[in-house]
Image (cartoon, rainbow, N blue to C red; front, side, top):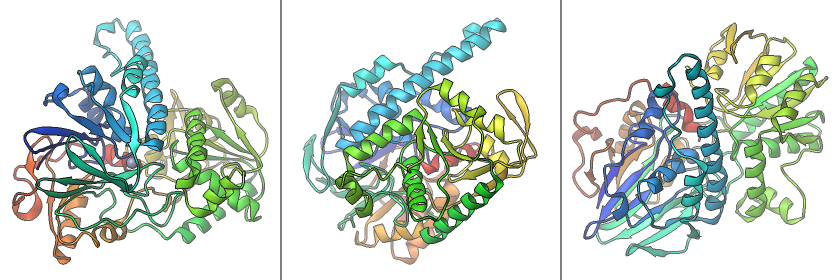
Length: 487
Ligand SMILES: [Zn+2]
C-alpha cells in the first residue's frame, strides 16, 4: 500500500493523493487546486508524473476547490474513468468547478488586456482550463457514495463516513489486501457549523489525517456567538455598513443561519442583510436539497418548510450592476460578499467605498493570510491599495475566530481515539504545525510521520525516524498557503 502526494504534503492546499495497491492498481483521492499566491498557484501547472489514463478511478472527499479544482486538468490529461463522491459533493463540485473555470477565463482576458498595452501579450499564460473542460469532467462524476455504505471500487472495499466539515464531506475507510486505511479528507469543527459531527472511525492499520489546526484549540462556540453579536450591536450603533467577507460554501450558510437566529431572538436589530455572492446563493440551494444532512435545528426547520438561511431582511444581489448600486444605499446594512480573504471579488468595491468611513465595521470571520489585503488590514495598516486606489482604513475591524470549519487538536485526537494503534501519516498542514503534533501523538502511543511531497511512501513501512522525511524541503512562504486552510 503506497501513497504519493501531489499536494497537501507539508502544505494545506492542492490536496491530491495517489494510492497504489494490489497488483499495481492506482486510485486518486481528491484532485485539488493550489490556492494562495502566485508561487503556490504556479504548482497547478506542474505535470502529473503518473499514468493518468491508467488510473482506475478518483474518489472525492468533498467539494472545496482545493480538493476538486484540478480535476479538469486530469481529464485534459486523458483521464476518462469514474469520479466517485457523495451526492451533495457532486452537486457542489459542479458549482465550484464552473465558477473556477469562469474565474480562470476572466483572469486570462484581464491579463491579456494589460499585457497588450505593454506589448507583452506572448507572456500571458492561457487559463488552466475552460468551461468546456469542466463539462467533460462533470460527465465523469458518479454520485454513488453513501455514508456508511460499502462500495467496491477497483476491487477495494470503500466506505465513506461523515467528516462533518462541509455539506457532503466524507472520510474514507478503505479495506485493502494490506490492511485497513482511513483517509480523513478534511475533518469538521465539532463546536460550530451546520454539519453533524464526524462519525467515530473504526480501528485501522493506517490513518492519513489532515492537520490544518493540529496545534491549536478553537474558541468555544458560545463565546464566538457572543463576540459576533456584540460586534454587530456595536456596528448598528455606529449606523454604518457592516462588511463581512465570506467564503461561499459552509461559511456563508453558517453566517446566514446565525444572523437569522440572532435577529429572531431579538439579540440584534433587524437591519437589511445583502448576500452579494452568486456562488454562495447557488451553494445555499444545495443545503436545501440535502437538508437531512444538517444539524437538527436546521434540518427540522427545512422539514417544516421554513428557510433557516433567510433572515427576514435578506436581499440577494444577483448581478454586478446591482452590487455596484449598493454603494449608494443609505443607512446601516450588513453586506456579505466574497472572497473570504478580500483578494478579489465583489467585497473589493465595497471596501473601496466604505473602509475609509469611521462608521463602517469590517467583521472578519476567516483566517487572513498576512500577505493578503485582509491580512494587512488585520495587522493594522492605516492605508491599503484597493482596485488601484489608496484607501484609508478608518473602519472598525473585528476579528472573530471560532467559525472555522476545520477540526482543532481536540477534534483530531477524538477522531484518532477510536482507531486503535494505527500508523498515523500527516497531511494537509504546515510542517511546523505537524512537527508540533508529532509529540502529542507520541504521548498517546501513536507513531506519526509526515507525508513527503511527490515521493512515494510505503504506508505499512517503518516511516521516518523522528517522523520527518529525510531532506524535507520546506515550501517557500507558507503564509499564503495557510490562508486557504479555512477551506
Ligand atoms: Zn475543505
